[in-house]
Amino acid sequence: MWEFFSKFGEEQQKAIENNYEILRTIEEHGLGDKKFFWGDRIGIADLIFGMVIHILAPMAGVVGVKFIEVNSFPRLHAWVTHFSEHHVIKDNVPDYNRLVEFLKMRREYYRTSSQHNQ
Image 1 (tube, one colour):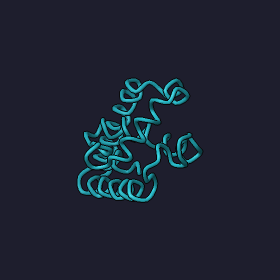
Image 2 (cartoon, helix red, strand yellow):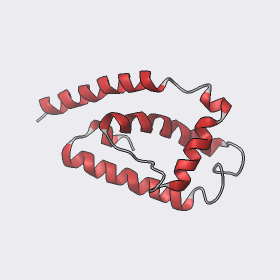
Image 3 (cartoon, rainbow, N blue to C red):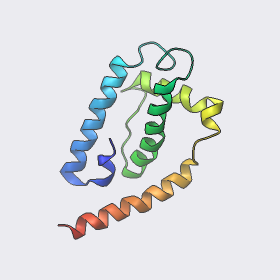
Image 4 (tube, rainbow, N blue to C red):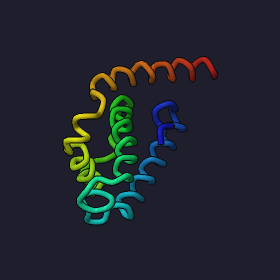
């Protein structure tokens, strides 16, 4: 799921398409009409997927990709909103802007490493 961040060109595009496919599967089969994966309360699946989403969003922002838009993934978009606004989650996730700054440096490292390996 993270390859889109460390790859470039065709490899990156393939990784982005793979992420969309994974998200489509979760959208279609994972949530249904529930607020969280197991109903009205946060469960272990929400916590695990939440970790993925809270790193995926800033990585996607650094790369310039938007994965979970309301038009393309309405259930996942609603889930992200519910999950992120929950007081336990909101009070315990890393600062988004600090994470973005770190990820920008990491992305540049991948860019220079890939140029040296060609």
